[in-house]
Amino acid sequence: MGQVQTTKYESIRKNTCRNLIVRRKKYMYNIQQQKPKKRPGSRIKCGLKNTAEASSTYKH
Image (tube, rainbow, N blue to C red; front, side, top):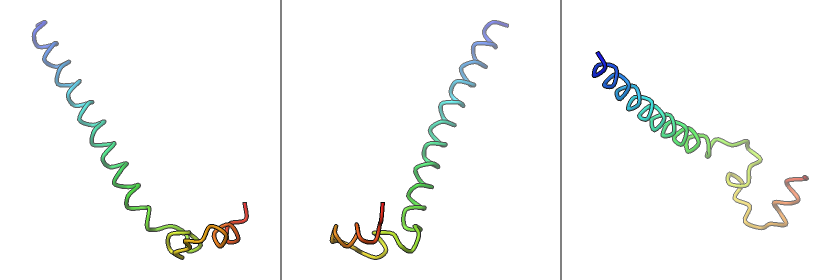
């Protein structure tokens, strides 16, 4: 009986660890997917290399 519980606990631990890794991978993948899809006024899409131009576009 005790052995079964320990194996079950081990499997649960493995599953949670794997789920965390999978979740992190999905999260990173989502971030990578979302990067190009920014609003049209983003620095990357417009290709503003000049900081002055960028600061004029972004009024903070």
